[in-house]
Length: 336
Image (cartoon, rainbow, N blue to C red; front, side, top):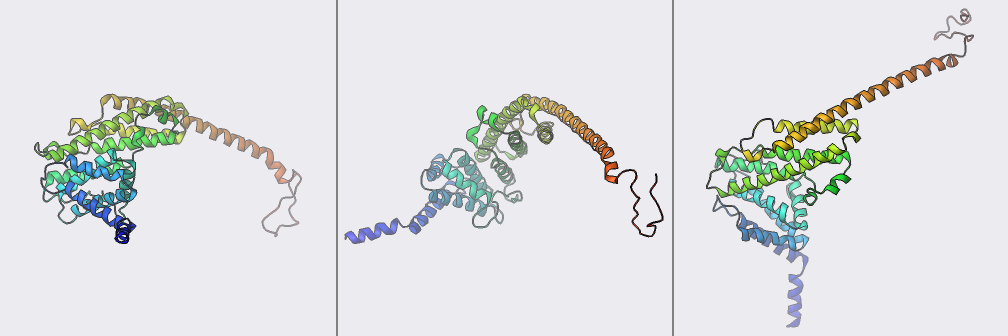
């Protein structure tokens, strides 16, 4: 009897069995959280808690959940498309990336950037079919694009960390400013209010999450604009050009009012970005003038050096004149 129990325990604890069990449990949890009906309700809280629990286990279980969730999203996006299921998958992915343990977030990033089975990007849903439900399908396209941009953001735990920003080199700070500006721009592309029926709580959950992303982007843009204002005089020519381009994107994105009031950046943040852009352009003009002066000085120095060195290189005033052809050799003497 003892030998049988040992064999059974060894079978249950073997890597292959554990992997199969983790994959089956993950698929079941994902199917329950993303069931088709009700099509207008977001995933239930207890289903979300079940998915979050996979992040408190092993890396194997976290990878199984990430694979199951991306497989479910890909299946809902094929053929005529199932907008309700796809939108529930995107809502879950957005929440898990924000709230899950590090081990699960890490596996989700790997699965989303490149699917392990197909090698394709699961978030490439710009051509999601609009036939069945135009409203829900429009929000699927929007949510997938916004999630793609969110994946490029720096670590969320550094949000508003002044010491972290002060330690960043200028190119990295500008790059992060551009990333948050891209999030603000993506949020402005939200479908019009006509695509958000009042009774569709699933779509309004997407609206709520997008508004949170806009607030986070706005706060981080403001923090990086302030930090760049303090170190503006330290920028080189290339960094100044990049900063001006990024700040212009922030201004141009706020030039026209969005269809949703919540989707636009705060006017004070845009005004601060405009003032910083004007100062950066002044720095850029000074750097350009300094470079021109250096070029003129180098050319003048090179010209003076050529006038001094040329006679010595010629061998002196009394040297013979040499021709490329030997036809005149011995018949033409040097000019004296």
